[in-house]
Amino acid sequence: MMLIPTHHFRDIERKPEYLQPEKCVPPPYPGPVGTMWFIRDGCGIACAIVTWFLVLYAEFVVLFVMLIPSRDYVYSIINGIVFNLLAFLALASHCRAMLTDPGAVPKGNATKEFIESLQLKPGQVVYKCPKCCSIKPDRAHHCSVCKRCIRKMDHHCPWVNNCVGENNQKYFVLFTMYIALISLHALIMVGFHFLHCFEEDWTKCSSFSPPTTVILLILLCFEGLLFLIFTSVMFGTQVHSICTDETGIEQLKKEERRWAKKTKWMNMKAVFGHPFSLGWASPFATPDQGKADPYQYVV
Image (cartoon, rainbow, N blue to C red; front, side, top):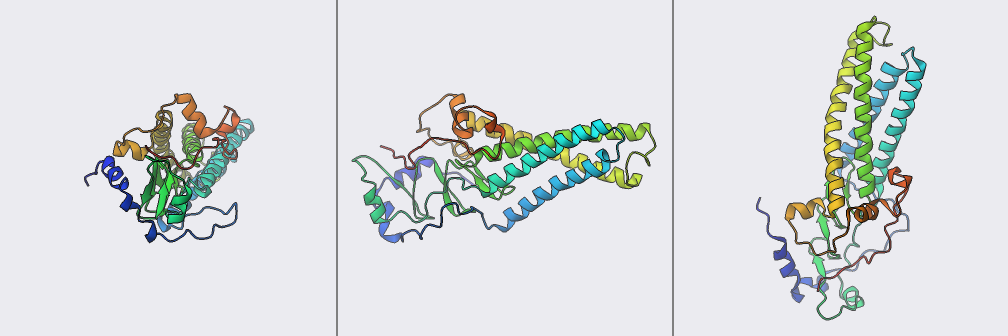
């Protein structure tokens, strides 16, 4: 499918008749503060359930096949604590990425009254999304799954059943990082367990029968290798996107850069919060991104 240059859309949006505020109905009454964000998409919900199932399967194999039957209690305790901590942080990051508003623009706010309330100066231009009838801030894009315009939308990820945008990118990055770490940890433990079983009697190295043990370990090895590669690539892509301050959609569409260029460190702090702290690695710490103007205009 051929991509139409972005400036073509911008030229159309500059025409006054393009806004057509009379065709937009006022947005619905806003819900109560703190209302949970959740996308009702069948494919996304299924992928999210599969994600949790795979993590819990890895948890089962690590605990009941490798660690609990082991007679080396120090080895079991240390690896059990590390693996469970990483798995907990991965699932917590997944929940925050899935249930956090990624930066949705109010739906249906392209009304005549709202446009007049903006008190635009001569030469200022606003953009309207014809799909959700919203006045879009600069760098916002419409998601066909969420059916909303999302500020600094990077992409829609079915594995977290949500868009990755301005408000939840930190949690998505942490999710990919922790999944990669538990995948690597699981692969290392599987390797040591195979060596241990080869050196000793297979009937003593696991509480399951040897064929069942081998099948469970091979499945975990395949799962760990697959997700280690996938999440490592995704993690690297996301970090690069943050450092260059250019979303995946902006890179794909090769959009003209209209925003101020900042240092890589400033871009990292804009996503993970000010200042640098252990909160960067915590899915429970909400990043302080400053009070930015939700609507930016192009002269």
